[in-house]
Image (cartoon, rainbow, N blue to C red):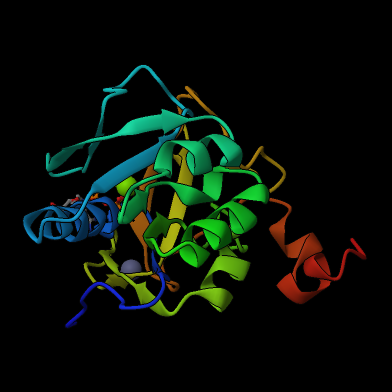
Length: 208
Ligand code: ADP
Ligand code: MG
Ligand code: ZN
């Protein structure tokens, strides 16, 4: 991955993967390097759960970088004015206005690194991620280690009291006592009711 600041315009890099796959670590790594290169770098994250270190992006392994929080895509746009490199962590939590906000930043010459979950706990595409993955110049899909078998994990398992969360649950549950595990496709357990509404293509067609 040899990447330098574009000469005549910005670009979008998307880093996706399940929980624990190292998205935040990778975001921090890229933005640190931009800083080392003398660029003005900023990390933004959504205000989803402000109980935990609002002023930083923190990885599961403890890597840390200062960050500002935003509630809306237009706030992201406003905060990012004047920066050469803009990292957005947990980008799937912003509403779909984030697509245009990122587009505007890229058009005016910024390098945007957007990190987020490509799939929700059901294994379905998460928020604006499908579009961002399509329009990005660079895409990296990271793997975690499967909590069950140690293989490469591409999915996020939500557990409630140790059992797979019901398929109908809210996609975003802040402060819930649920726990999450990285799982490979073979070890992933869809929640109850999933068999009734699968296949995924049917869900996306809006017919169910
Ligand atoms: P993400 O932002 O994708 O959730 P983080 O960057 O916060 O991931 O954390 C990645 C780190 O989490 C890894 O470097 C590793 O130290 C730790 N980790 C804990 N559990 C796992 C797992 N199951 N697979 C991979 N890394 C894990
Ligand atoms: Mg993260
Ligand atoms: Zn597995």
